[in-house]
Length: 285
Image (tube, rainbow, N blue to C red):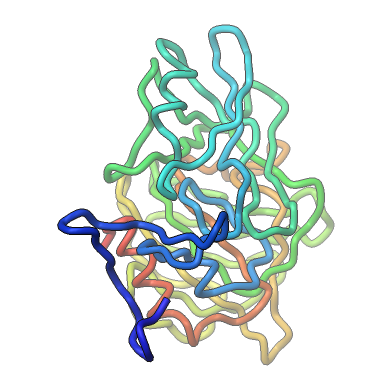
């Protein structure tokens, strides 16, 4: 929203900040920066914050361990409704059965096997990292879509519980090409099964040169933001189907994930803006 040609970055009534402005039921301005409003065209998008102003669905569906009842949990002020989540899972554990796709493409990531569902509430308390809710993917936990999803660039917010493990963050196993992205304490590898190449940015750094494996320094229980894009001049892209370990494939992901956004385009020209959006919300670097 503008006054004349000037963007409005903040609005107040007296000393009270206004977060949103509506005309009827249509939101026309918000002080909150929706990642996918500024950088649209996502192939799939999973987050515990709201990524699009037009998205009206829930963030996640949760099963509470006490009686296996499930409930959708939405957003309040563009963030996960942790009050409703804690109330629903009062005194018990909560597990994610569905992480809803906010891209508009309907690629919800689900898990019907209780023992394989990642955790978001522990004994009535919402699991958090750096003050924000997060999903804990313990050993052999995964959420999967029903079909493969092509993508070229991605933005992930995550941490490892065991950085020395080969952590399988995404895979399309058991499809024939076995595309995957995995991390350990010193390396990020993209599509290692097919010798692919990508550029890599960690915690706001500049993009590296194209390579299959990228050097990094990763520590346990530390929050990271990683952006990458494949070499489109060589028609390179990856295929996504699963967050975490799919169907018992090697290299279980051991850690927490707060956000995964994938685009079927090279968004490297938007890197600075994407980094700013991520860090303004998560305060990682």
